[in-house]
Image (cartoon, rainbow, N blue to C red; front, side):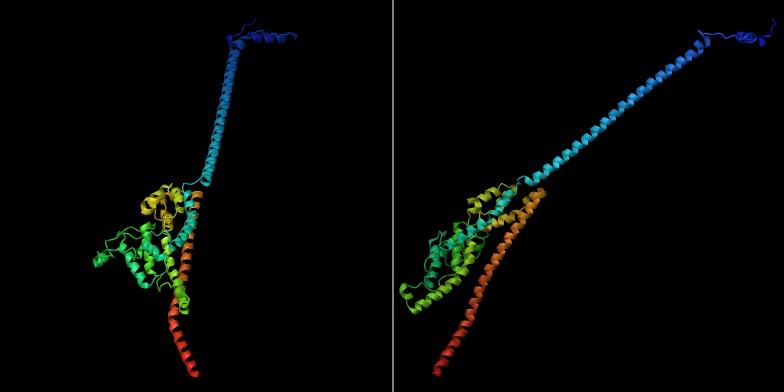
Length: 406
């Protein structure tokens, strides 16, 4: 066999292939049972690759599971947040509805103000009835003053004598200096000048410098009625007897007295109305108990109520009206109540205040109407004073002319 240099030596595989090519071609089945390169080089690499791929698949699976789990957590958190927001919205709406219901349907602390204002008509009616009773002498404890209102009118000099006797109970410092110690002024009165001072009607008789009393006690009522007697006396002439009335002159006298008494009654009416509206009214007792449940009203009552109102638990019409107005307008505690009101309560209070103003305006209108009546009567009296002498003079002229013609 020819030898070749080492560089030219062929591998056994090549020799085998060349020999096969040189020999006749025969189909031979080959079964490869093993391969060292495959087993030693390729298979380990493939094994490593398979392990790597398996690890990657596992990692991807874990990542997917983690993503799914995190997505579930996020979805749960979103759902919980949405539920919490829905719960909060529902609670807010419920709270708003409850607050609206509280404002609309709960009984406010100031409900008693409604009942207080609602009693105004009853209080006024009681005062009007009391006025009629006072004109007949009811409610007057002083016998001489009561007689001046109920007994037939005596002669003017007898009326003056009675007025002096009444004044003995109302001597003031001026009277004491002038004729103190006499029968008409034995001592200084605790109601000085009560029968001659206009303040007896407005503020109630009492000591000098006292605070105004809008609800009179019995002594202040007597003093006010004595002032009304003195300022509008009913003694233009004496009361005639039955025998005197039968004559023509007596009938004329009665006619003149009737005309005078009609005018005198009008003159006394405002004073009687003032005294009557200053009397304690039973109609105010229950309503004051209710109103006093309001702290601001109770505080105002303690500051301003008259002694008689504190003692009896009742107010006059005058004091009740001033109390009902003053506990709002002149009461700082009411401002606190007002600031605490809102919604329907504030609207109701505004309506109550407006209604009260309307009631007071109605009272002003009634007083103006009464004043117009009195002014009309005064105008009639003035006209009578002016035209009666002229008419009588013309009547004399006519009588004299008729006599001459005859």
